[in-house]
Length: 189
Image (tube, rainbow, N blue to C red; front, side, top):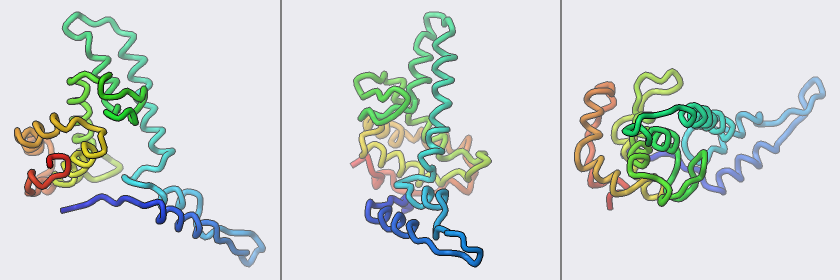
């Protein structure tokens, strides 16, 4: 089964020591072995985004909050801002933009967190990346449960009900739909 790369503190320290290496080129200019961009990309602990890229991505939710909270909703839609604006929060408070913890997140917002991450990982039409295999996306979600970012009971329901597969068959490219044992997923043990 696919496993995402997780860089250790030792790996990052090694990259930083290599990045400190410099030399003088034929024109007498001091050059670094690695550029700032190369160093930032090689020091990503997990995932594929640098901290600067992550911050740019996070800024979109601030616009959503301002827009959604300024609208008047009929009674049956009053929870729309809370659900939509909290879909990047984590149960342990490490999410964004508000750093909310489990007790501050409704069940609907917790469901939206899982759905949003799953869709982002598997979407086959993003211009900047290919959609992941189904097993990869489910493994990442399971690891996020283990890291106390996502609701374990809701992830279990998502997996065991087959909702992930129903979505995959409707919205994912056939090449992405691989077979795997859901009972071996992290976050379900």
